[in-house]
Image 1 (cartoon, rainbow, N blue to C red):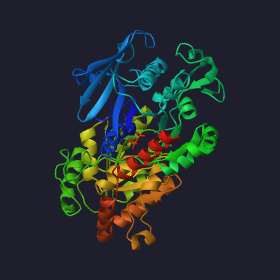
Image 2 (cartoon, protein in one colour):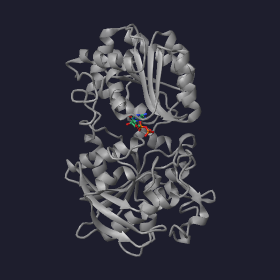
Image 3 (spheres, helix red, strand yellow):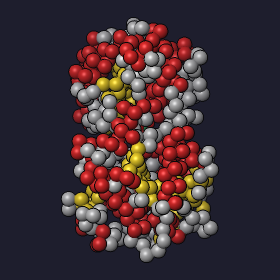
Image 4 (cartoon, rainbow, N blue to C red):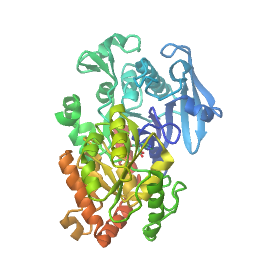
Length: 479
Ligand code: ADP
């Protein structure tokens, strides 16, 4: 079976969040099941080197305002298809945002181009290769099934995965014709959303199957609180919607073989984790005392991630004797507030604003627990890294966080199944209580070590989830 992945990011080449990790890992997991994938991405400057070895396999004279070609490149086990459209993608900076921090003004054209090119490849193949299934990801690839829908020829079925329903790709209806979309698609039953074009709605409407990245989030997005306006459509398509947990790449995230750690460790050699802890404390300028846990946060700094709630809970954390290392970037106001808190609680709270993949590994390796107070979390990856590294996740009970962490209540501790701490609702008071509970558990070294070992043994790879995707792909082929 051949699958065409269509996405806007893919680790390790270009990453702003969890989407990239999934695109970087799922094709490999599918390959182990005998399913071959090609991953189609825009050719951003970060991929120029990768593209050098590329072979020209398709071209367009005018793709959303300029010439484009498709380069096939095999790199690091990936079979990449890179859309070289310099008028859309050859620009420095963030892949979605200009230097002013705002979306690139032509994002509609940029990602419509990705979708249009992917639809052409899906419909016509490349040389002797053709896709049996198209797997489109998030709003950036949402138009793929819409373009296929308006073609007058047989086309492969599309699965759309929603990684975060908060990002929908909404653009002016005036763009229908410029984007090459049939006017007939502009209706409530199509891709119209309150007077705009919604790329994500297009994907949900025209894809044969819709998946999202955890069972709980699949249920949540059918409710007004989490559905961001698309709950009605998703409920109507309930029979075709499913939730499949993300896994993580067990080779990239492996405490026994992680070059970013100061000292490797494993379930059998937990003690070595302490050296990584020392390194994190030093890097963040934190007091090297040992009585209470070292917490970490590795996250976009946004209200979705509950960073405001984290800041409000800091007095409790510090009063418990705990320390906190924060790595992240995002909302400017939250960045400023967390930096101010680090000054106020000098030696107890340390903050590095920025994006630093190696440091994120060291923090997972060296912290005792990772805090994730998200207001919503489709799947979440950092709690999965936390489990794998024995860094107990302290999480809001929502989405994939609820599905992957087992709360350390007394019953779960007695039954030997706890792997972290959950709390709800996402308020400073409930979060503060979770921090207290975590500190109490940390003060019971045997129970803490047992929870660490269980966390590290908890399956967080792709085995079960890649099998679930295969089942969906096969059901689409049989339909
Ligand atoms: P989201 O995709 O909503 O941002 P996820 O938890 O699904 O959240 O994935 C976030 C990914 O980005 C994880 O791999 C996490 O380690 C990484 N990450 C987030 N912020 C940073 C940062 N500042 N530096 C390094 N890695 C980061």
